Image 1: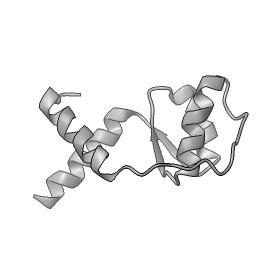
Image 2: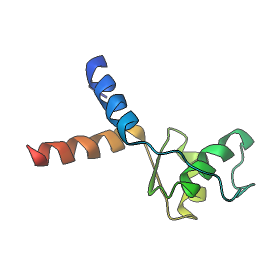
Image 3: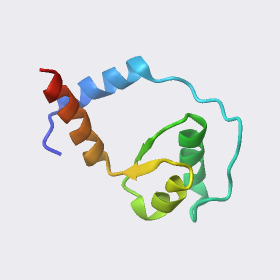
Length: 89
């Protein structure tokens, strides 16, 4: 992705500062082919996410859309974040 280890650390520190615990109010199973992926989708749904960063677009794409969530490659999310930061400078 063209970023340094220091930049990765900065992003992870920023995420740690704003993350909120997600309480599972509903289980939406089964939605996906791989049962091991269900918890990821349920966390996104219960947490009110609008995007889900994943390399597994094939499994998450249509299932996430059913909940109004866009499954997006992590690199695309990073470019969005960087774009926003560039605009603020």
